[in-house]
Image (cartoon, rainbow, N blue to C red; front, top):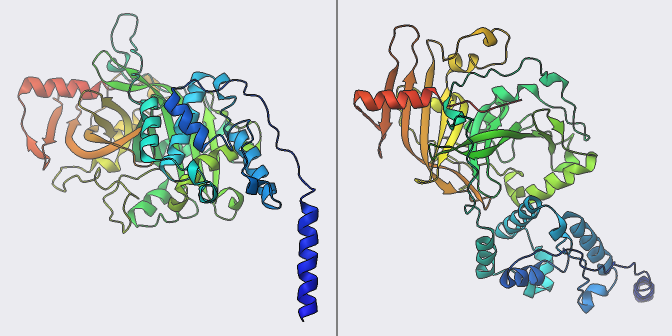
Length: 459
């Protein structure tokens, strides 16, 4: 037995010695275009990120011992492909900014630097002060979106809203992503789970869920999400209107996550897809585009790779898994607007509030892309119910640079009438969202404002 053990030891020693001669090179390349940043920011990035995310080769003596060196080399080459600070400065400013925000969020959520790396390289840890320096450099709310007006100087979101969606564009004809994920034309009819105000890139997001996702939220069944769950994250550019409010502008893209633990086992149980522009062009050049998706969502693997905190009154055992504060509407309201379809949203930067306009089935049907809709006169038909829900905002705990709804501050209802009938306006506000009774002039102003909010544009 002892001889056998010594034979294994000797064989292991020989293999270890031979392995030291199998030493593939990690290319050390010149810095072509480094990020332009203040010294404090550069120092933190160089100290905590450059070992893997740059063209420099910064190895400790123990990093060069095989077989660990092979793993180190693989991690460095993979990291450079995702983010390389030695070349980032050559990318467009928007891309640079997006990469930096992703890096900061990785750090904030504890995903980067890798724990196994900081265990052996404790100097790479990012302190709270260093993270604050990075965040201050990015200033997500420092650059407001541009003012968008029509030729007459009128805010384009406060004019007649029934520019009915084109019927010639067939959503069923949209090409699938290279990974095989097909576009889901039914996404427009999914329920709103949350909204996001993204100061990092000046966009708004609707996060919609299909029936399976909605039922999962209502039944505390989102850890993990059940197979068949689908999300659509729809993005629009932000426009600062002449009314001082920030409204959705140009349509940007729709991203889809589809849960099928078996089919997508190699990509964290999710199918990923993104379609950009009004033509809904698939984002990926090849199937490897999903590496970008899974890498971005890796920090929230404990939440089944989902960033969104759904707005729901359901109670969960875990904190920061749903946004129940935003759903705290009293049962005394005459209607439950959060169950309706969302039509648009806006943000008031002065009061740091966000509002979402919801509509009942009658309102939604008047906006659907049908040939009959094109012949309808402007205005919502009789029977329309609209609800404008206003919340305070709070920082998104899962994404630096994002804000989400928090405490509800006001709920306004408008019942639209056609012909000689008068529209009915009701408002509930204050800590308890009790009904108040504004004068006729104020009611008429708010009714007109709500009726003329332009629904978001979709392909």
